[in-house]
Image (cartoon, rainbow, N blue to C red):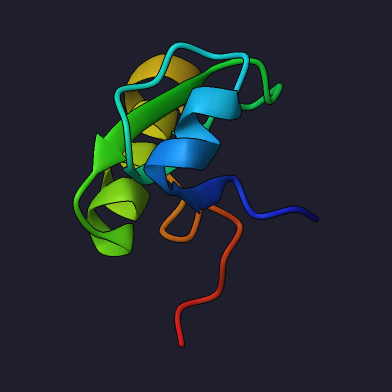
Length: 70
């Protein structure tokens, strides 16, 4: 399973087909069609992804980002 959370530099963000707001942490939605961000930290992106899952998808899974916490 791929990690829906990614960090993009300014150059990488400019190369994405999505409209993004520069460098930072982003997460991708459930169908990898839209990305949300940028967030200052990976933890903030994980928390926003968890909120997205609850509010938009109706699922409340502690590790819904698919990434095991270290």
